[in-house]
Length: 118
Image (cartoon, rainbow, N blue to C red; front, side, top):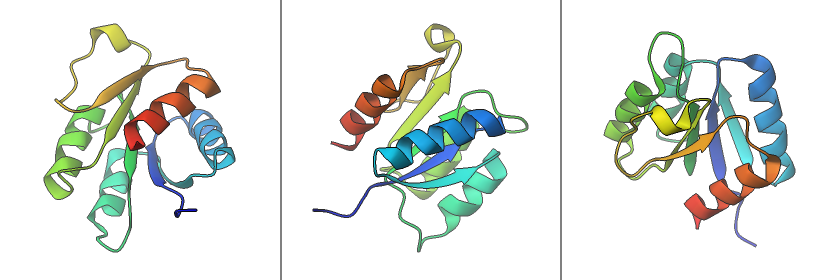
């Protein structure tokens, strides 16, 4: 069995973040969490830290999810990025990233994450 994939979850709503983290941990992923883009970038900047996927809220305070994605990709060009948004049809996201609409089911989240890590 290969080591569990590590997912960085960036979500400013503590309750939503906790729910996503719980689901991903139940699916046996390693999970890192950040309440905002600054904390997320601290984690992304730590080259000793493995990150297989970053899941970020599209609407973050301060720096948007898209800005965060662009900065993260500058450091880790191959990093898969999943945006979560309540307005999934209406958002522009960088090339090579994916979107999951909020609210999403546990099954939708699992399937999307697994397809992106495959």
